[in-house]
Amino acid sequence: MTSPLAASATAAQTLLGGRGVLHAKPRTALDWVPIIRQGISSAAIDALTKSLRITQSELASILGIPERTLARRKKEGLLNSEETAKLVRLARVIERAEQVFEGLDPALDWLKSPNAALSRQTPLSLLDTEIGAGSVFDTLGRIEHGVFA
Image (cartoon, rainbow, N blue to C red; front, side, top):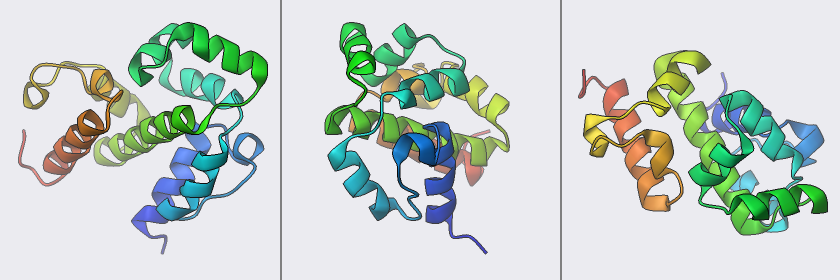
């Protein structure tokens, strides 16, 4: 049986473009640390926009990274550690929502919809900060355990 951390690492890896983009195969949460520190290929930007069905501009807004910076990173081919951390955080949230809602489509619907538990903000709009992402993770946990209808 796969542990939840390993499952999360695998799903997040896929959302970011797989081993071809990451040049590694993280199996645990701690396996992400060296990947984040060295940065990942900017191809992860295209992988995430495709998975989320959003534009690069929308992704930039979700991550709190200027759109011009993302465009520059795509030309350079590598994201820095801070940008990589934001992409990994986003992929982990998507993966968790996909677990809770048992599919990518319902997870994306939830992530893109205003939520009363999050002060009527969309979960995606909170992912540019660690505290916002933590609130989204907490809300997903509550939903999973039936605290919110």
